[in-house]
Image: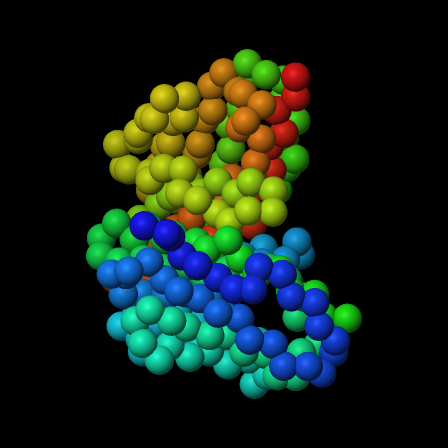
Length: 114
Length: 110
């Protein structure tokens, strides 16, 4: 299995631009999570989906952030407009809901907003 | 109080040393516990689950104390390759998401 796939791996953009991050979960997994990691705040959960349905988006910083999961094999996280404080590593993770709850992370997207 | 608290370190230890990390969690309803490892500029990966009776995987031993809401990870005979950040992770009841600590950084020095 290829594992969780994220693209792009690196993104450098200017303040005000739209940024779209992409994630392909592990085939068969039915839960998907978007995280943001910074030195100051650690790993923060932004939003998660079960069976393609958004369950909890309380971690999304503000309306500039939005996430979609149109099908079981694809999700996007969009930031519009981007700001320098959005600079972070964004991870996508997937799991098969159940007792064990092991999450498998993608390699992350390192976002820099100038 | 943060949901999962860890000493951020760094812990700088010589090769061969034994090192222990501790973690406390605030939600007494938590049911699942894990240690994840994150290498520099990489994604977190599951190191081991933590069971009530304690469990061992080679040089790594994890312990859980539910009464004190405390989890530990012991690494014996440290290797240079053990250098990483170790994340304490807790899950409450049902399908609620995992909660990650900020991690403890370990540097094993030759």
